[in-house]
Amino acid sequence: MTIEFASSARSSLGVEWELALVDTDSGDLRQVAQTVLDAVAPADGSQHPAIRQELLLNTVEVVSGVCERVPDAMADLAAGIALVREVADPLRVELMSAGTHPFAHWGNQKVTDKARYATLIDRTQWWGRQMLIYGVHVHVGIEDRDKVLPILNALLAYYPHLLALSASSPFWDGRDTGYASNRALLFQQLPTAGLPFTTIGSWTDLEHYVGDMLHTGVIDDFDEIRWDLRPSPKFGTLEMRICDGISNALELGAVAALTHCLVEFLSRLIDAGEALPSISPWFLAENKWRSARYGLEAIVILDEAGTEELVTDHLLELLGLLAPVAADLGCVSELDGIREIIATGGSYRRQRAVAAGSGGALDAVVAHLVAEFRAGRPLPPG
Image (cartoon, rainbow, N blue to C red; front, side, top):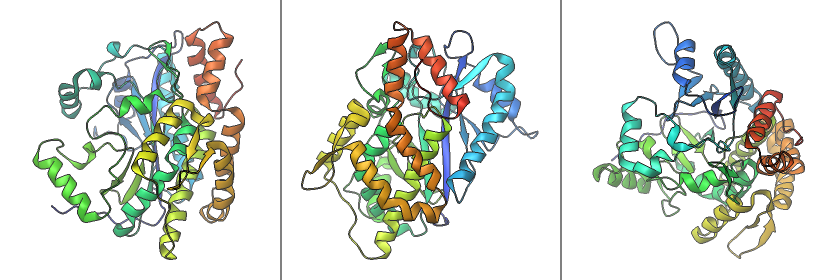
C-alpha cells in the first residue's frame, strides 16, 4: 500500500494537552466533557478546532494551531483553556493534568459515545477500561518524508529524558505504585501501543507494516497505531507521545521546547551528513522501564557501548548542545524550564511530598495539581 505524507513546514509545531475535569469540592473526576464540548462548539455543530473529545467523559483535549514557535503554541493553549474555564467554572469543575488521577477508580468512568471508542473497549476489554490516563503530544513538522523514520529512530535515544521530565503518575486507584510514571506501563498494554519497531527503517517498511495490520484487521486506520513516537502522515509531522500529562504551563513549554529542538537538531545532522544517535532495542526497553520506575533519579543508557549516566546530568549537558537550536527556534526561555523541572524534582516527587505531608490524603494531591495548573508553574508542596 501507499501512505502519503502531507506537506509540512520544517520544524512547524503543534501541542496537544489532555486535561482531567475534576470536582472543585471533592477532587474526584466529573463526567462533563460533553457539556463542555457542546458549549464551545461552533454554530454549525462541528467540533471546536482547539477543544476535542477523548475516550472518557472526564477528559477534554486542548490543542494548539500549527505554530512556528513554542511561545505561540502555549498562547494558543491558554486561549483554549480560557474557553473551557468559561463553561467549567459555573459547574464547579477544575482542570488538572497528570499521567493519572491519584485516587479515581477506572471502573466508575464513562466512555464517550462514539463508535471508534466502543470498538476499542469491546476489543481490549479489561485493559481498555483501565485507560484512565492522560498525556501530552507534541507534533514537529518534517519537510522531507525520507527524514521521518531516521529522526524517529534517533529520537528514541532521548526517550527516557522526555519520560523522566514529565513523569506524573505515581498513584493509581488510591495507591502509590512505586513508579514515577505508572501511565507509561499501563498504556503499552493496548494493541499497537508502546515502543515503535526500530526495524522499520524506511518508508517502504512502514507501508508494509501498515498494510499487514490493515489486512489482518489489527487496525482500521493509521491513527490506531499508538506508538509512543510515531509519524503522523496526515499532518506531515513526527508525533511525540511519550510524556505523561503535565501539570502546568512552564513544564509543558519546557518539554515542548526540548522536543522541538531535538527534532531540528537531528534534522541538521542529516543535512550535514553526520551520524545520528542510535540505541539498541534492548537498551531502549530498559531505558523506558528505568525512567518509568525512577523518573529523574533514573540512570539511563546512552549509547551502543552501554555508557550510563544519571538522566538529570545528561539533560544538563544536552541543554548546552541544543542552545544554538533553541535560539534559532525562539524557545530559549522555554527550554531553560528544564532546569526548573530538575530543581523541583518533577511532578511525581511533588505529589508524593504532598501526600506525605497530608497524612496520605490524595484529595490534597489533586488540590495541589489543580493549583499548579492555575499557577502555570510547579509549586512547592505545602
